[in-house]
Length: 507
Image 1 (cartoon, rainbow, N blue to C red):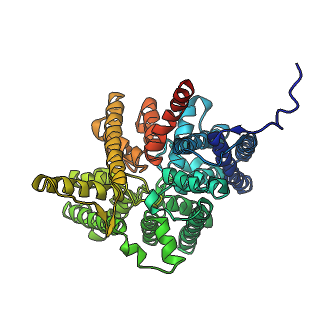
Image 2: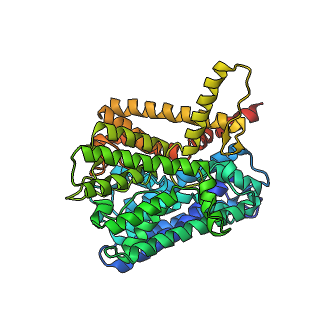
Image 3: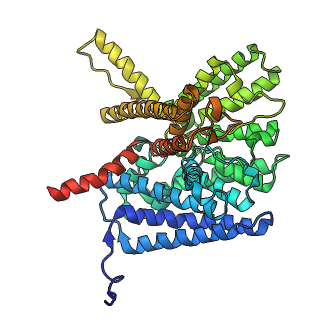
């Protein structure tokens, strides 16, 4: 039987999901190639072939999918969620190949390599590596870059060169990328994506320069920690994370950078490009986020100081750093021999406060994880409205954010998200506990995964890793990481989309 000579000349397949997957995979190849070059020239290891091969495969699969498929002029909302979620899964699978081919994990532990990749792209920062420093520089760079890619989102990057999506691109970004629809620019998808990436890249470079000119970090240290900080990821190239530097100056830079990255990037653009610095303080969500973070830092510092954990300067330094790291969902650690940065050893009251921060996370429009302050605000305002309705049953009370009214559809969406979040945390906790972990480790692990946090409490604290969980438990946690990063709806709807197409065809 002869091959059809017109196979590649016929009309492309109408598949926006495969088309977007192809573009996302193609965009991974520059990062893989760069990591391969660093591995080649570093001289301390020789796994460059694993990175170069992954770059080639990623580029070829990506371009092939782009050639054989196309995106229609109008993309349905359900398809957008499917495009987002399946692209993220594809990137996570591709991101695990260097770990396997480079011998970081044996093929028999494919699930561990996939866990590390998902943790990177979801900016969770959880790890199953026992000795991070044993990896070559190129492999370490790739590990950090997965968080940089995941920070702003592969789909936003793809949309920057896919103007055909038009307004659909904005809907796509609001489904996947940091930010709510109401917080996105009212402009074309291409312009918005390029603007966000420009601010994101500028932030990363600024952090890198600040770290490089500080005594201690090398240029490699500055770059690798800048990309994970901008993405609020928390991966480090050292086993002891930021504690490796034992530098107050480095920690202050990281604290400022974590807070900056946990605030809406659209606000940063308006503050700098449009020279409107007051935009930060006009945002009620930003004010609440900063207020909650600083108030919690003060409370934790006072509790730890009265708990006689160490000298006052040390308590202030470690309390503030860890509160900010968890409030921004970055999850860096600063455990040192003479410090008190291991919050697993703190009192129960401080750990409850930390769990609260882990649950809430940063603001919409940022790279931070968690439920987001925006939803917390809406939830509290909705509760207040219900209480007022008991007193005035016929009253009409509109929920507002600052002076802006919030549409009822957005209120319902936010409350549904909170309900989903709590439900999945409970289900995850029960499943992980049933697989052998204690309740504190299980519950904090589920919250940490859903909020893309990194460290947890109990056996999975900042001085440990996620090998404290069994292999089946880590699979559950990996799913929760994707669920939390894609803000639940995208993952649920990507599973609904195929069934919906089948029902439509039958009808």
